[in-house]
Amino acid sequence: MHRDSLVTPVRTAHAVRFSAGTAAPRTLVPAGACDCHVHVYDSRFPAAPQAKLLPPDASALDYAVLQQRIGTTRVVLVTPSTYGTDNRPMLEGLAALGAMGVPARGVAVIDGTESDAALQRLHAAGVRGVRLNLSLGVSGTADSLLPLARRIAPLGWHLQLLMAPDVLIAQADVLRQLPVPVVFDHFGRIAPAQAGRHPAHALLLALLQCGQAWVKLSGGYIVSEQHSVEDPALDTLAASYLRCAPHRVVWGSDWPHATASAGVQPLPDDARQVDRLADWAREAGDSSATLQRVLVDNPAALYGFAPTISSLS
Image (cartoon, rainbow, N blue to C red; front, side):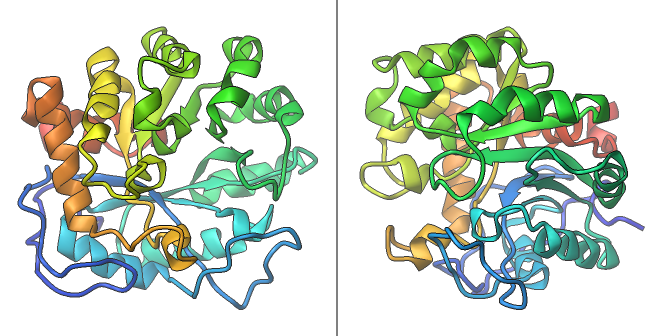
């Protein structure tokens, strides 16, 4: 039996691999809370030739320990750029989580030449979207946007994108005509200082408002000029998304923080990441209702998780 839908698990304070701090969050997350952006790494699988991030092994079992600390019970595994289009580490992670009774979904990386049968196997394993990462140049290009979207549309999947704001603007016309929902991870790759200034921010808000897009409040420490989720400048950016379309926002920890392992930023405290989400929810208005949406209801709608008791009441 899946363990997430009836009660919120007891959180425990302890150290977790690839996460700073030991304390549990001050924020009590709702039952069925989902972390929508997690990677697993396994050195048994070769890195792609162009891979820029080569973090140490981080398993689904390691992540399950983090769940005990922060209180989430559902998770979305995303194939990282390290493996190009090799989804085996992510798929093994899904299987391991399933064996532990953890409801999990996956976001794969494909090149569009896969057979229908191969895509159906991914769907059966729990995949509900594909990611196109244009920030690291390992696989895919902006020209892949429309072909990939058309390829996955019959499956009811979404297209998850990571791209620089200037690229987002350059692809505005294409984004508006895609036949699938678009999920922008890592705050849309928009820096806090660009909120209200860069046209990509206005475009993303418009796509959220019309129901074409979703945004993940993930990787705040990546887009912050301070390299920290504690950066107060993140408040305005996060609140802009939550006020515009609270029903189109999800949250992710980005564990195990591959860029931090590479020395780009300090290792974040994932309990503090949860508390910062609560800060942004308060900034946007009704904090408890917003947390329920962002952590439970929205992920259930986007990834096809079962409704929780509170969602049905």
